[in-house]
Length: 225
Image (cartoon, rainbow, N blue to C red):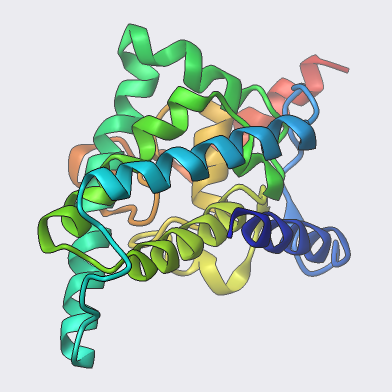
């Protein structure tokens, strides 16, 4: 499963690189290059620990699947809302609470392209997937449901870290996190902590202006020349 996710992420990256006239790329700040080997190693470790965690929490292949579309939608929406609010809190702590900061700094130290969503320290990912398992553990999801959600979240993460402007997603910055919204987070290393929904940032005053982030980015780049 993780290898499929990695291949999909790579395909997205190649797609973005192939169409520079369609997507306006935000130039990366001076950072380290992504390490595919490190990324794959961490991804496989996270995948293994994720599977073990599901087993310990009673999320099995034998658990019944939803019997109606309404139930599927309810479970999906509840899972994503709880997950994203929990991850908003975790992500905020990763930037402001001492023990969390060193691990998350590794993620911010990699140049911002699609595959970088899997570049980071192992504890960083463990902190992140805990909120994802809250609802599935309480409602005893089938393991296939959780893997499907995890796959979709990884694809979204790849898009959010693409470091470009995608017109089809830019319109939704006030509700959903797209690459332009998250690019501002990587410029300031503060604010825009939401992963899926930007509503938490707007509600709690942590939203960062896209326009201000672009201004700061070009100032930093000009100083480094």
